[in-house]
Length: 416
Image 1: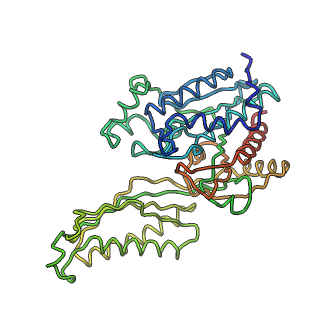
Image 2: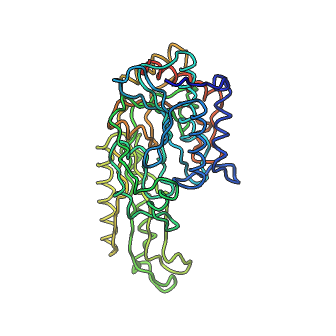
Image 3: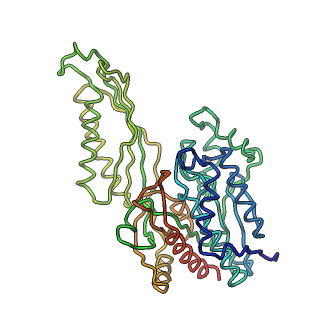
């Protein structure tokens, strides 16, 4: 095996902050955020820079057919499967510098520290920089991990375009991943997956804990709902004769909000996008389209909630002579993390006097994709004030280092 060359700076406790800033330079915005969308120039630069950094440390690097980057520390037992660790390189538009990036950097540093202390592992460890998770450029999520578990293929994206009309496959080819050379990235050699991530919420900070050990990742359903009424004059149309789509939708949003609170404390529903037509001050709105994002860690709760609110939506629109169209464009089932790995993480945290707690993740992560195919562990570090997907996203260096310490111990137990 080729000797790994560990730059001593990666053994220093302050290195993670410097690397976070370095990676954030690829796609940095005027507002201080990061915009690094799948297959964009900033995305390409970031992946290539990471590859170069891994090459410098003599990890065995390679890309798969969709742009997932791997840095491989080979194990001494070729019969053993691979321990995979990492996160995603892409961001939302005007996002933060820690989301996804921290998980890649933490894994990279942890692997280098393990090699410096113990040499080659028994099981191969691979650090992965997953090409896409957020769904910020194209209307799909988890392009990187879902290719690896066989859910996605080129057929899935052949008709997909971004907001500028650029075809997915064209963007992929322009970034250096020619669909004509595509080979399925499906991996059957992964023993376990470990992801560390910022919490993107305020629970850890509120409870003054340093690490969250995730037991479940919520399921998510997203819908586009359209109500079709009738546009008419704002001054001459009596209130009783109106088919006002805004009025109907206003009731729907109030109803779904109250129903969420009644049904289950862990259930959340969000209307984040609203489009009104014709959107003119003196015209009764004839059409409204809105988004609906629903999340819970039990599929039965999501199903019951959808059944009840959609029945009420149908009743309201029918009674007012309007039309209702409900289109589901995302369905991700809740996923339970591996109990044994969670137990190991708790034990290791306790040995190091790391304040930890069990958590349910309300955000989606690549860990939920891998959780369907192999034992998976997801760890959180605190987010200041719970802010994420924002230029003000921040986790203090001390918390970042605590996370790396625990991740290093977890990887040692799994691979050594």
